[in-house]
Image 1 (cartoon, rainbow, N blue to C red):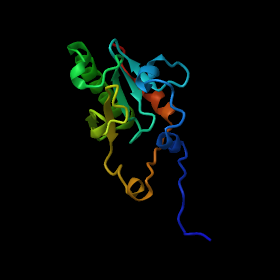
Image 2: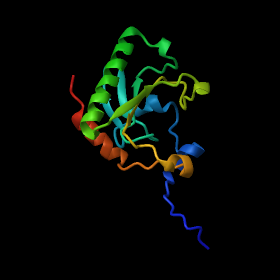
Image 3: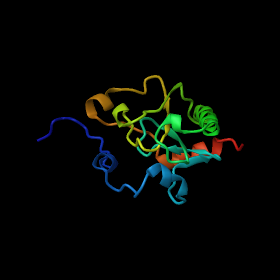
Length: 163
């Protein structure tokens, strides 16, 4: 018997929901050390940019300090400046490769504020387009992403300027 609904399967989300296949330790400390399959887009002296493994939208980047610190007030002036510079660069690069109309930029400080990984500071750079929100997340609890993470990573790496 059918209910007349089509299904869009996203089984990869279950690993996130169930907390499976998590590397030991902090994923933001591990990410810049990976070579094969790394989603790191750019590396600075004090911070790096990495694609979110579970993005809200295509091109959703995280800007992270290399140091394992939980709070924005814990980073020093040089880290703050490079984090801001990487955030601006991320916006420029994402606009260049995907024509984003706007961005959500922000940090969730502490688990009560929504930080999924509260122990390591990270800033979200989420590209937005007119009409990018539809019924799927609300009704279907599913986000439709039109591009593989590795394809997005390659586009961003190619467009990221060398300092």
